Image (cartoon, rainbow, N blue to C red):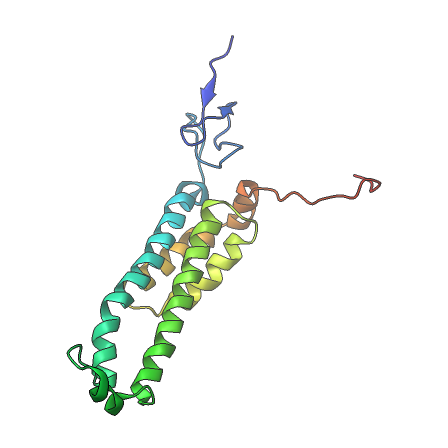
Length: 178
């Protein structure tokens, strides 16, 4: 009688495979070489989600100060004093555009993280594209982008990622051949 092994991530039975067929986590079977993609995919997904949170939170911390600096608004102003600092000041529009850009970047980063964690078939290419676009984000963005490209562009990464992806169910009509 063989020893039953179970995945430490999802709890499903694993039959000597280096990768859990259900969730894609390395199983730790001795003597099996685990690829770079398998070892780093979960960490990469978590880092992209953390980066999205960092983008949003850091902008939310800077936004009130930038808003005051560009519009001349002071929290102690009330009613009639506000007409001098109306919404037509060009700095106000700049803050709105930057906010929209940061929000889009945070949403894309969040999507990359979720796509990698859920092993979506389109996740690898999407992550590579967003990583290239993030290369110029000073320090954290550059480091995360380089790490992403290092993991997802290694030799045979496309085949390794394809083995990890969750197959999508395509609904078939009742009379269609399988």
